[in-house]
Length: 418
Image (cartoon, rainbow, N blue to C red; front, side):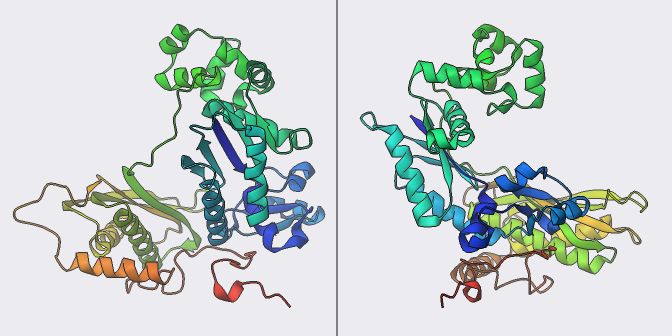
């Protein structure tokens, strides 16, 4: 059996744990730079605030409906997510963290368990220990557990936040209930092709013949169909080494001077290099991107990118950052107001197992230096050690005018009980 545990309105729920005044009130969480709505409470949804709404267009609507608007507090959300995932590991060793607010669990050797009761144990422990409300869907396959979770979320009073598909009758009923576009793994294009075949629900999809699905789609769609039929074909994903690592961000403001842009690129490249070392990889090339604000149609537009190939694989912050900064100099055009930039490291190979070059190689001083920097930053839980051309105050310069305190990750923001 598989379970899908999903945190309800996760970002909003994290804020409510530490600010009970938000309970029962409409709340909206904004994206980077306070751009658009990325999370809403059920109350905000019922009022009509759409997901992805640009806040500058919906500010008046939010004020009229007393919707509390907050900036994204990623340190808080990340810490609360880690707490939830650690709790889930107490119920089974087989856990796949699917996203920041949901995870798949596999139950091997749990044949004698009452899964409805076990699901309520999971939900109650997370709520008691973290204050985060969740829904739990349990079924014989991953795809069906997703649907079971949607049932639990849609009918909280009837299910108590937990729903188990443990019979053929429940499986068919759930598949006939769920619309095709709401089935996990069926995107817009696939839905359009299946609609042309007469499929409107998940059940309709499972009635197609295996041969037709294999002929017209890939093995992935066939596995999904079998999963929905109760035959497990989608296993828990094993965490694999990434083939490329990217750090892309919008700036807090538009920049037309190269010094500010160089500082941002240096910070992005440093982040990529740190991630490389974390997964034990080195890169053969770095791609640097820079673009203006496409939403400002009256301003001159420019977008460019440059790829730098290294003569040897590297995970050194110094090497990668220097290459990225030199690349941005060739992309930058004076007079353009730039809004977004990014750094991608690719061509990844294991740091401890790659082809060496007889004549060129990394400066041998870089390895111990990077090791020391990583050790200190990990020890003090912050980026205390940075390059001289980085902003020494902040990692990302984002507009966060409505930011709540970092209740669990910053000592000065811890709640004081009087």
